[in-house]
Amino acid sequence: MSDHTERDDLKRRGFLKLTGAVAGIAATSGVAAARPGRDPGPKEGEILVGVSASADEIEGEVAQYVPGNAEVVHSNETLSYVAVKFPEQAADVARENFIDAITRKDHIKYAEDNETLETQLAPNDPQFGSQYAPQQVNADDAWDTTLGDASVTVAVVDTGAQYDHPDLAGNYASDPGYDFADGDSDPYPDAPSDEYHGTHVSGCAAAVVDNGSGVAGQGNSTLINGRSLDESGSGSTADIADAVQWAADQGADVINLSLGGGGYTDTMKNAVSYADDNGALVVAAAGNDGSSSVSYPAAYSECVAVSAVDSNENLASFSQYGDSVELCAPGVNVLSTTTESRGSYEELSGTSMATPVTSGVAGLTLAAWPDLTNLELRDHLKATAADVGLSADEQGSGQVDALAAVTTDPADSGGGGGGDDGGDDGGTGDSTTGSVDGSLSGSWDYDDYSWSWNYSSPSRVVVELDGPADADFDLYVNTGTTQNASPGDYDYASRSTDSQESITIDAPDDSTDMQVDVDSYSGSGGYTVTITEYQ
Image (cartoon, rainbow, N blue to C red; front, side, top):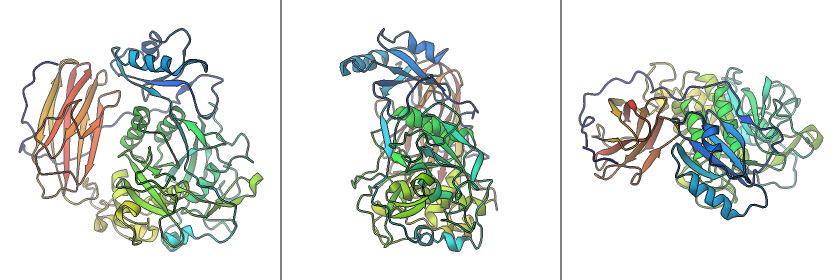
């Protein structure tokens, strides 16, 4: 990388009024191209290879480096990755050598195992009884204001679901979803008697309210299902990422991820970033192993991590917790819909249940305040959450509260304008914005900037990069230091396979100017960096 002169363009620049977010990745209606015969569930032996936008064609770029005993089995043009499958008898070292070799090639952004994620359910013996979750989050009182709105869509990325269940059919879309596990257009369970999760999650969020039978979800939002897990509750990173991308392309307002496991992957990070950029609120389960950190995907900054509490509002014994938790919700012995072949209704426990309770309340909130952006909705749910006496690591901002969320004007709660003033304050009060244009000449080039804070103890800062479509630029940020950010030294990074990047930092360290680096992974062209600081 060539020598580079630090630039001060953003230091005390004249601030521009923010008129809209930098354009995100363009949504498409296509479905990722899975090969016929790809089995649902875990994809052992597969490697996911991310390809830079500067490549001419992603599948061909990878195929030339695939050894003879392996093959390309799947690709996703929107998220720009390819799946390479090695035979079962291939040694781990063969896959490791492939990862090491291909990541050294031009245009290859990353290579990683196609990890297995699982439902975040802690099953117990079915106990039929009265619901408590809607009452505990005050959804029943919120129904005096609104029962929900069919124009709000909640996407359940999960196992299949019995979408024609008598207590779900009224809220499931006429086109109920897509099956990424089997590669077809019908997300109905293959074996309904074995499917215990997606149907239950659907009911927690949006079992039909006020239909005179069964149970009630949190509100009457429209449901769609992206089937990405098999009946056992396991699925691959690729299937889940494809389903998240698909849900965003369908215009989902809320995407529910009652699943987790494994660690950080670029493929899933790019998927939830895509969804966030396209306006969806991504709600994810904190996890069920009782540890003091949340699972991925909940741990991604784009996701709202939800912990579980019981009917006494104590943290569930199984619930993971930590500083990434933003909200809590009922998740112990939650009564909801299940497939008719399993008895139609049953009680289940897990952060898998707390998550759709939260998603359902988010949908109900949008019925009352339809002009909220996903960022404003996130802030509003947190601002109106109820303190149930747990630590911040256990409850985040508190237990989601439907009544407060639908009856409190977001402009008053700090959760955004709610359509009253059209402001882009992200729900955190006043904001100020600056931007700078620049250009990079190639993979050796980069630009550094610094940002001088305008507010004392800013609540949030958003850094956005809008770069050329045929190049791959990345964004890096340091806070609390005067050291320039770089690919090898950063506190925060956004490095998708294209040049549309965004970093959001809550309660940033303002002890020094913020350091921003725009780096060309490959390609050249002009770009715009926009920084929005919130009071």
